[in-house]
Length: 228
Image 1 (tube, rainbow, N blue to C red):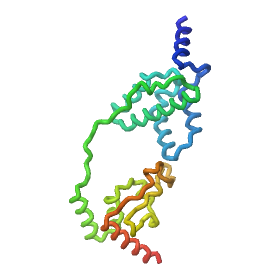
Image 2: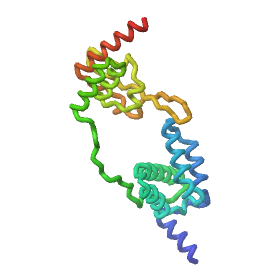
Image 3: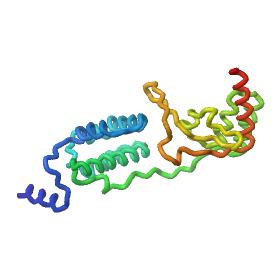
Image 4: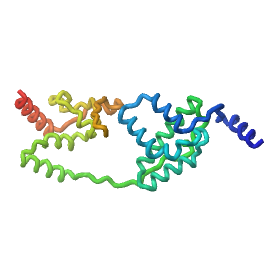
């Protein structure tokens, strides 16, 4: 009788999914294989699932996982100081359950009853303009080969993956611009993946100051002479 009342309640709430007896591990295996993901995103999901989510949730019935189960996983990560990992776990679990609800594999999303973990705000420490000037001056004094690259890194604010993927064809001296058109990722297995940035906002033109333009132009000319 109690079971019947429970089922009626699930039906009334729109959460009943007949015949769904998949474990979280079974559903996620099918879900992950069907997703079109970049290599870096897939790798991140796999690591997060293997190390943190599947050990705790893998053998549970997908529909019987409650907010308390997920809260325990997130708390464990947060208490260990891995707040960013806890945030990623929260977002991944939310994405999984949204997909499960759309496909009819789950009747509710337990993640929606939780707040995403928030890291403590820490003041960012960065180099001062004087420190940047000192570094560039010392590299110039030594005539160091890395001076143009480090100057560009300081003045452009590019991400590491974007910076590593730059080509001379991305440099427009006349317009004083660097065009961000691709990103390079070095995978743990040694594979190098080059792809376009994920969003239109990431595909952009970055303005350069006159000093950086002059330095890059001189370095480009030097490279052309040495290559030719």
